[in-house]
Length: 226
Image (cartoon, rainbow, N blue to C red; front, side, top):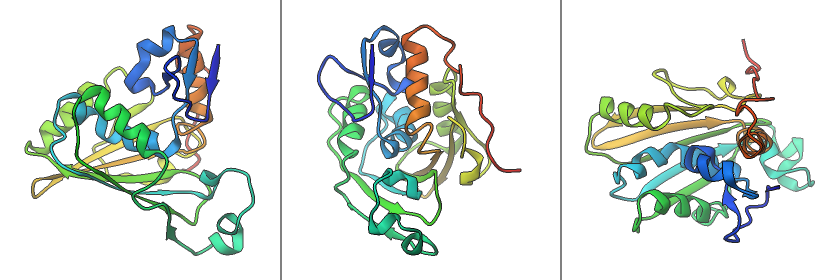
């Protein structure tokens, strides 16, 4: 049985986002591990798609740490460039958009609006801080109930009443979600560690599901802040 971390899309591969495909992953022989940005963004919007509540464009601004670029050396990963610096890249054309559209349509078939995604490079090592907003006609309390219901059985994704900061999830496999309603728009903040929930941690989570281990096995990690 194989877990692939390069977003392989052959039909024999199950897309390895447990909050979307847990039962399929449990039965799969081949799983494609999601991208890091794709994970954070999808976890911010899937509860709305599950209720057919995506009615307009989705706007995403998400910032990743230097480790999001992998281990290859480049100008934008060198410390002297990254330190005290900030930039965006691949605006509206990031490679993870295909994953996001695929998962939205798995829950809300026929969604044809745009996901406007601006990825940013942050001056920190690890983590993704994503802010996502779209039109929403319900109240903030209704949104919270929708998200809590969707994630009530999720092992690592939680809805928080408090505003979020990135160190809450660094060194964990958790995704934390915060909701805020303003003038007809719902703002969803989603934070993950790009190296764990966005990569190796999610791969272990998928492996646990595939081999009938406890889903949290090997992933009971503490955030590295006090």
